[in-house]
Amino acid sequence: MNINTDQGVRRGRKFDQVLEGARHIFMRDGFERTSVDDIAREAGVSKATIYAYFPDKQLLFLEVARCECHRQTEEAESAIDGEVPVQVALTIAAERITEFLMSEFGQRMFRIVVGEGERFPGLGREFYDYGPGLIHARLVHHLGSYVESGQLRVEDLDLAADQFAQLCKAAIHEKLIFGMAQSITPEDVHRSVHGAVEMFLARYGTKA
Image (cartoon, rainbow, N blue to C red; front, side):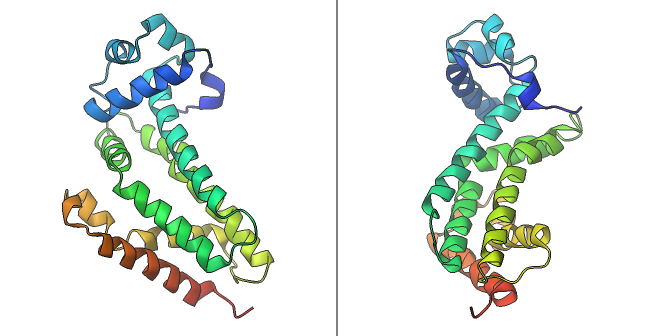
């Protein structure tokens, strides 16, 4: 499977309505159990309308993920517009990453993609490209800007972006995987966020 949402998706008057209905059903039933009939009923549209926008269910699932990650990324970037010090920018980014991990959407999407991996082997790759991969690309871009301004010293931006994202998951991600979300406190999140920023700056920060 090699999906390109830019080539497969058509937009129309009821596009957002279809996406919202699909989001609700995917979150409730997962990928495999979700039917186009259920999405059509939830969205209040016909199956023909859905197929006019999305040739198949996988494209619709990926568009739901892409739109949510795009929204999260735009919100984070709006908060770091201008000349924000690198520590502030990294803290905002870490808070957004952990917020997404802790969200019902983030947790459900992760479980869906992992659970459906064997039956739909290309789904995980495509989900990464249109979801976490988008966030990764924006991290690389912003880290590069701080390298240019002299606030960071990074030779491998791609690796550094991955490292930062993984640092943000410390003490949180495994608990989420094993269904222990209720045991994660605001103090745990604060500890992970600020620990990630401090360790990242200890490795890549400059005194400039």
